[in-house]
Each structure stands twice: as C-alpha cells, then as structure tokens.
Length: 181
Image 1 (cartoon, rainbow, N blue to C red):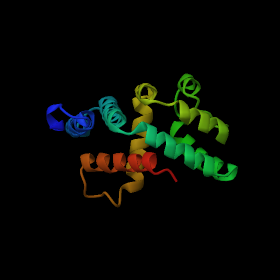
Image 2 (image 1 turned 90 degrees about the vertical axis):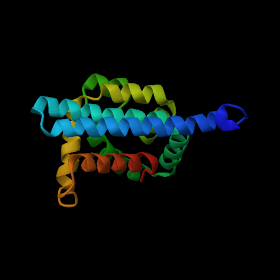
Image 3 (image 1 turned 120 degrees about the horizontal axis):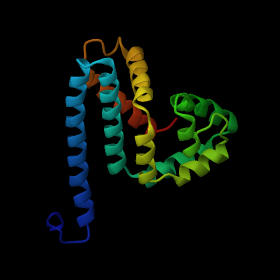
C-alpha cells in the first residue's frame, strides 16, 4: 500500500521513484546536449559541456544521501594523518585552482586549508550549499577538466562517443565522492 501513499514507508517509495525519474531525465538531457556539443562552435561546446556536467552533478545531489556522504568523508578526514591529508587535498585542490577568487573564498577553498578546517567545512555543507557551489563553477573550468580527463583516457575510450566518455567521467566523479581515498 505504500506505493499509493498509504503506510509509513511512503516517503521512501516516493524518493525511489523520484530518484529514478530525475536520474533518467538528467541522463537523457545530458546525452542530447553532448551530441549537440560535438558539432557546436568552441564557445557553445564549452557552454554545453559545462551545463551537462552541472546538471548531472545537481541531479546527483538531489538524490544522494548527503548526510551519509558527509559522515563518511568526515570519518576519512579524521582518520588521516596530516601528511596524507596534504597529499590528498593538494590533488583535490588542483580541480579548484582555476576557480575565481571570490568563489574560492565564498566556499572556503584554499591551498593552505588544514585538516581541521576541511573537517569543519565538510560538516557545514548541505544540498542547497552544494547546488549553489555547482552553479558558481565556470563552464570554462568544467570544460578544461573534462577535456583533460578525456585526454588522459583517450586510449581506453578511443572508439566511444562523447556521450560514453561523459558517462565514464561522471562515474569517476561519483566514485571519488562516494568512496574517497
């Protein structure tokens, strides 16, 4: 009966249906925009790739268990020694190095962030703040990292379409989020 809105698990069933619907919609919209991006001008190509990755990221945030991800990441950070944190954080910071200074300041992204600061920062993030951060990412930065990823993966993905490549890129991002090293 929960499927029809009766019973205590109604929200859970609705969330699963919503999760599936949003994920499918985002995937189909992403595929169509990436097909268009292959034939577009460089500026349009950048905009379409940026919008596609942002939409995938925001769809993921909508359906993800942010509390669980936050807890997992805080536990990982607390379990790291300072040297391991610095090594990991510098690798992650490379993704954010090209962000405008005001965006880095607004969201607490700094090259000299300590492990304690990172833990405090992670504890403050919620779905709204993450979606807002995603919206501030410049398409140019997203496209730069997407193309860099494609360049590194060119041999493995040599015979695949840009849609398959974007899907592989997104799966890699999800693994990094869900299972941080």
